[in-house]
Length: 292
Image (cartoon, rainbow, N blue to C red):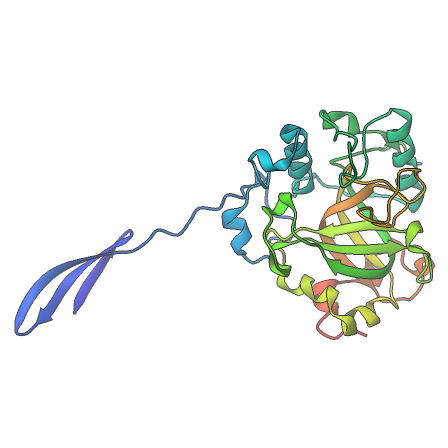
């Protein structure tokens, strides 16, 4: 057979029982991604395409199953998927997470466990979450700010299905939660959360949930770069409405979510791992090839 392709059609001669027959073969066009960004991926050099990128949009589920107030729910989903927070990343400390939580409570911005009867509504105007507090250097920080933070990893886990990921199941289609703390022995209620979203996630990042890798990673501080996000679907440990069922243990509802970059320190103390000292940091992608 001789043939030639034109787009998604192949035409050619087929020789059948001594006769030549002109045949047209059609090919299905590859699906266009529903998850569309208006910026370059922050980890473009490491990314791979996942099924969820083609089948689940920035907003996740868009039907009535998102809840009584689907618009605020979809706003939160889109914020969770923001991979476009602009550079440069602002260095922050653990105290900033507390200040941000305090600012939310002072301004009476709604939040709360969504798995209890008559839960608090999600914020219907997320612009109030931007530029809520200032760092010691006078830089405004809030939802949508690109930040960089150093801490120890207490544990990691793959999240269950969520509307933001269109209720897909499995590790490849769900977030990876990273529990961060100032000391490896800290109580989880003193922790901070970072999350890796599944969209275009580099394959090496999934190794952070492997126990043998995690055992080595716990010995070194990590440097997490990504967007500040307010997770209004829960209550933090200190809050009177905190519930073990449905509320992850943490000091603040402010997360680094999505993670844009993760690095591992060559040293084993936070004092020896300043976020702005590039010589002590190694990308997770390189470190995980020989974790030690």
